[in-house]
Image (cartoon, rainbow, N blue to C red; front, side):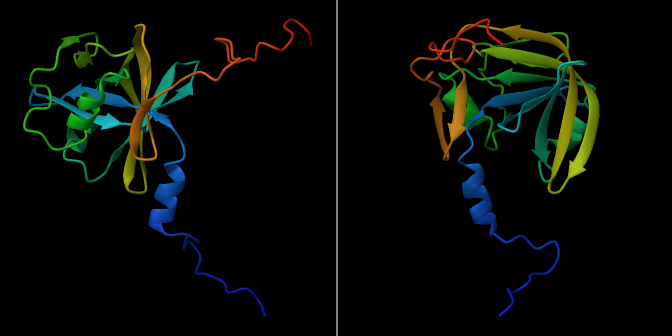
Amino acid sequence: MPAKSRPAGTPAFTERQFRDALAQFATGVTIVCARAPDARYVGFTANSFSSASLVPPLILWTLSRRSASLPAFEAARHYAVNVLAASQVDLAKRFSRPHEDRFANVPFRLGWSDAPLIEGCVAWFECRQHARHVAGDHVVFIGEVVTVGRAPGEGLVFQHGQFGATTPLRGQSKDGHSGSEQKGRS
């Protein structure tokens, strides 16, 4: 008996199965910030952050097309991506939910982008808007990195619906190679 075919474009999985499979992938946690046209600050927690290119230096992140802050980010010419430290779980939660003023009592400074650079983060990327693309129910933002900063600390990660931190595997050097590998041989 031939296999049952499904209509073109119909996934062979449910949305829940898709979400559960994605949850297997550990991601870093960021807060993306910008200044809205009305001069207020907007920001949200994003784990969709990724590098896109080294030359030129490009990063990308996504935002739901249903997000109330989407028009502000679409209008922004510059924005900042704050990479959260493992100690900043409360900030990640705060910026992931509706809040009257997400920035109230959050220490930050302004940099080149005129967007909040949150204190205590392990890295910051200030970007100029490079491109935007609608992709399904999200918009993909691609930013050209203009300034970058880094601080000591351990980054916050998200996996299986939980926050955590990374711990290097035993026997790994800082460059990711095992200590047993011979260096300098081709």
